[in-house]
Image (tube, rainbow, N blue to C red):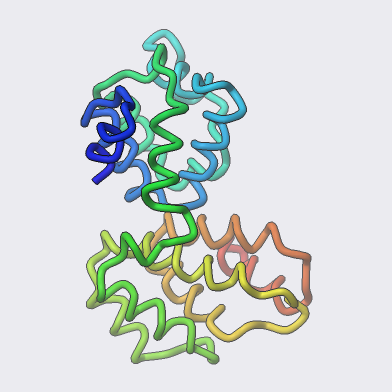
Length: 210
């Protein structure tokens, strides 16, 4: 779809470039992808972090990665080595195309029916423990977990008042306990909220400091 759109608009984007960005979106989720496109915009199409990742003389541990990318360091390392290399490529058109084709808020457009159903069920969870939802999570392919967490977070972003614990937050925590990337994604989002009393135990739980 993106390749056809690029061709129709006269954008000189090859399929490998588009595919590499789609892999990033699917594996690291909305927050990490938004950060990638933010860096592309801010640094005029040539993010320094990508150049560092592709530079064999720069140690991976010394690279200043965005917090949102630390969901899966092994993935970032492998992904950066996939062709094509982005160091000398202006990624502005590719980022524009990606955001236009699948807006970051439209998570349902890239989510399977099973994942959408799991989002709906987890958003209804009012109590800390749910055997039904635990089973639903384990029967959903792990490859869908990040899409589900993205869907939950997009729902939470619609909440204007966080003084009370919202329905669905325990559903998100339940999923986070099953996947490290989901846990870090949820933790990053919750830390961006105004600190509330009810939120502190959840933050500690996600940080592993009960």
